[in-house]
Length: 152
Image (cartoon, rainbow, N blue to C red; front, side, top):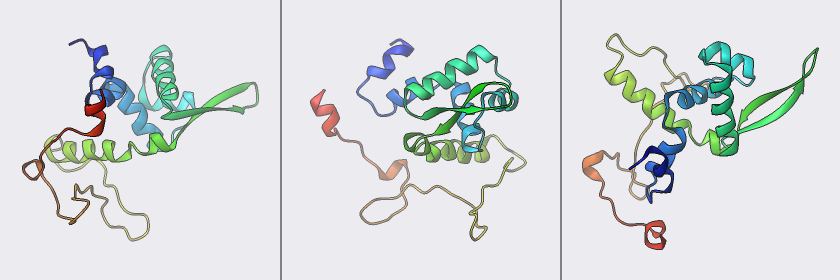
């Protein structure tokens, strides 16, 4: 199967991978969650070529993950990129990657610690059952066909 074919797969993992699956898109999103909004800030903090960065930002705007809005600096009109609701909903995805990276790719400990602004506790992701609240692992979950698969 070709990489581009993933966006048409009847799979809720394959389709996001087709959109977000290259490393630069995820790094651009990391920066957006860190408050970066302007093209020049993205370029400086990510170190990506202008053309590649422009393509990644354009793809995220087209997918309604970022919205592009104009602002005026001292010389001309420029654009900034802000996360949409759809984009903000990707936060747990990036935090799941961070949690895995902290566990397996940071032998000296996390590179950054994420804390709750109000109480200072560590921010953690939990995968739980929506009915009983039990914490889940791969051994606790079974997969079955959903309504989207039945209609495709």
